[in-house]
Image 1 (cartoon, rainbow, N blue to C red):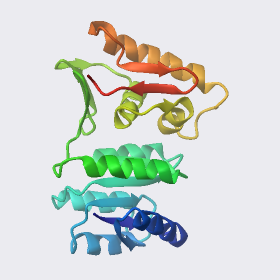
Image 2 (spheres, helix red, strand yellow; image 1 turned 180 degrees about the vertical axis):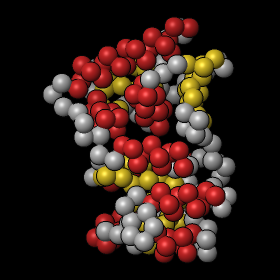
Image 3 (cartoon, rainbow, N blue to C red; image 1 turned 120 degrees about the vertical axis):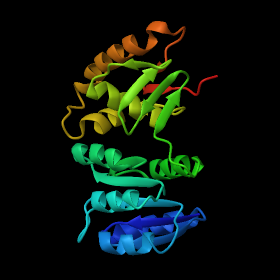
Length: 225
């Protein structure tokens, strides 16, 4: 498996490259958007780690170019913690996932493994049982019926589905959905309200809750039986 890392932080490139090589991945790097495109159009990659803030051509521009060219290579966007709007744009442009800096190496490796397990064809649908979330059209359906979710409810559900089968802490959820615009001391109750409203919309025709609370940790969407 060959991974291209695109970032203008040379120290981070070196750190990520060594970590991935220890996991038996082949690694190539690029330090700006133009160099990234030259490599992407010359060599097939199994995965691209793409920073948004790049010289010459930013990561969103790179992503747009490769999707317009019909390349379906999985792309994991790397963003600053507060760049919520850029994360949304990245998903709209065709990113498969994103990770906010600073991130743990364990979480990065988990995201990489999840993306590489997917089929070669990019599937915009995240599913759990009869619930389907389309990351491109930003629509959620249950048994084919459209659910009317708020933007925050959509982001919460999307994050849980991206991490299906793994527990998500309240802090990580708040960081993902609200960026820096949250108070860690008061956000827990605020998240609970959004989860409660989301459950009302999803669980009204289910025998069991889709989103399960893990006491003292956060929430999880289990793999359907």
